[in-house]
Image 1 (cartoon, rainbow, N blue to C red):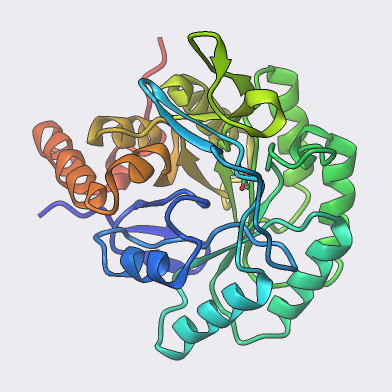
Image 2 (cartoon, rainbow, N blue to C red; image 1 turned 60 degrees about the horizontal axis):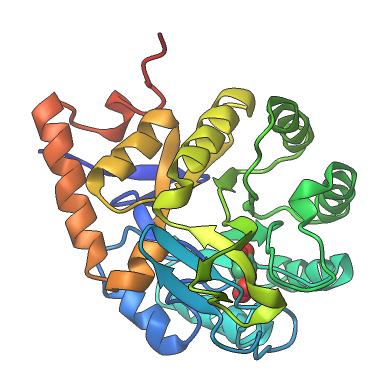
Length: 309
Ligand code: DHB
């Protein structure tokens, strides 16, 4: 028997594949489709204090090698998602993720205070990397600001929390971010968010409307960058901080590679958008086939064990 069981913080999951926040997780219908899928767990759409319509459409386009988006944080607002996770709690499910993406530090503190004071016992993924709000830089690219934000949060927040990071491309940046994260009781990091503010052109035109066509790239384009980020944070973070991989997952082989780099859980965004929740059972089957061929019985048999020459 092959097991894909995995642990993050104090939670155990029957398998290691879930949605990336933002994809098919905004409405109650989306969330109930995820809950009845084969995914090991799921995460809610990044929310803001108040509901948002998001940016004008077209704002998400499938590309041959991935996707480009500038959604602009459309979501039903914090209260909706808090109610949702509290309902899950009441029915005995705390092994889920609640994504929070306040537009300001004050908004984040307000939302986290309410989560702290609620019955929610699940995991919060604090999004430090939304690239699509004009005038709001990605916190994860401002190291000093990230330090300040985490200082404020951990002055009162005691429940399990992790951060969603943007991709980094420089060894010094991996080291700087790890040094900051290692100072806080963070339980996990999720890497990567989309490769932000890229430009895709068809004929003579951009393909999405917001921001002159600039948007975050996901899918096959970003897999090598995602794997590099998973690998570096796996190596540089405290051993009790788990890494969740995200980026470029189209097959069980891609999930396998994320885990080899050190991921304990793997998220899928672009593929889930393209093919809907049936992807989870396919990815599970494909991953198990690879493990079977290699004689691996659990994720621990190969997690982080990428061969270096
Ligand atoms: C959005 C995009 C992101 O990459 C993210 O992390 C949060 C929100 C968006 O545009 O809605």
